[in-house]
Image 1 (cartoon, rainbow, N blue to C red):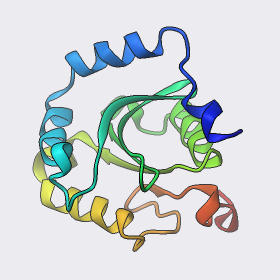
Image 2 (image 1 turned 90 degrees about the vertical axis):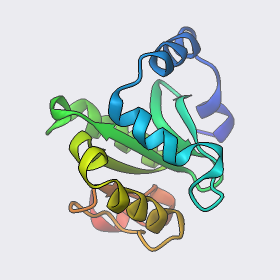
Image 3 (image 1 turned 45 degrees about the horizontal axis):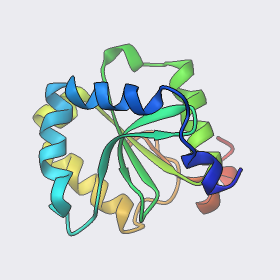
Image 4 (image 1 turned 60 degrees about the vertical axis):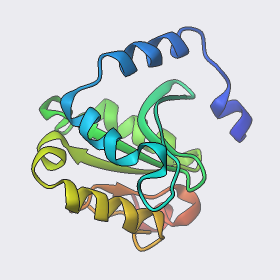
Length: 143
């Protein structure tokens, strides 16, 4: 699938993304305050971005990095795994954080995001919940 196909607007996704922006969680608000306006080392992020059939929490288009914030209902979620695989196959790396990490360990969250943006994270890692795009090595990990 080409990049054009991925970013093609899907019926209802723009409206859904706008609704998600208006009803953001406390954790999304806190992280967005750190990512918006190029606050994180000049990297530009957008929030609640439609990509194919999904809407991602935060996206750095230049580095093709998606940052997701997960609540407890995401633990072991098969739909999340399917979504992450789809995003990886389409050239996006995905970095996931739990709500409590954003609340209690924001500095570590930001350092992990910077590590992913700088290429220091490039292999799948359960500890950091980093899932690289297929273009940078996920297929070699068997994930």
